Image (cartoon, rainbow, N blue to C red; front, side):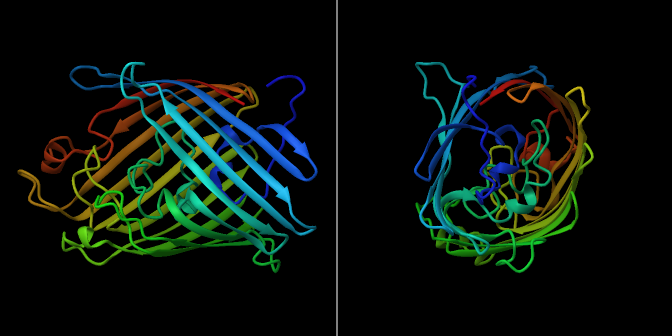
Length: 371
């Protein structure tokens, strides 16, 4: 960031993307007549090493860029929007490279009442899932994983979201959210969804401590219902965090029905039910070091049979995250994060279907530049 750039915070933006420290600042590129546009981005150099028989090395870097904008419509009414785009570096220039839009929404905010926006945004269940999605690398990899993008557990398209951080001006400790999801149908059971609705409720217990609960229910498409596992996709979760005095602690419990895909490729069917428990602890030293330890466990029920696996229940993911990051300054960070796989590699489910994140221990090495 050049010396003339200023840090500018959009505290009113209803997207929970602002909970992620890596993009909690940006550069103001336009500020005139009540119109403000912030530009932000990051460049990630990342390698993943798997402890499998061939010691696989995977390039996992990417570049992201986005903007947040607002316009003052009246004394109490503000219009806003956000867009974020990502390009991955895991393919050569002459090969097909992966790119994706991560966020794209616009809306209105009325002072002390709340905001409403529409577009491609975080699902309402991520209000809880974000609590433990703070590890350097290995988090948000189970029930809120990026493969589960058709319902309201991860980023979702076609969502209309209302949020109020002060309970319609009544209390500054209570926050509420309501989200409607429109039907998306393209004859792909892994990306489609029916109409749905979700809710979240948060309460600031004391300074730095918050509890959040969320629930969603969506109709399944006719193709999805063909598996005989019901007409609806449903999720609920409850979690708590403590973020003060250089300490970050978070835990959550969730249950999903017909929203969590199974297998390391996400193409092994959908679990009729899952139960997840997650916990994360971090401490920030004044030197810039931030060690992290987390435990993540997701078990699936009424799973489809595959090969010698006769169906039923099994652990889908079970691992310990152990890492440390170091911030040279607010714009540059390095980290190493270790994924310790606790799945039973000899179980029929693991050998025939595979864990949600594979069956191996993994190490992620990273250097990141933010602006």
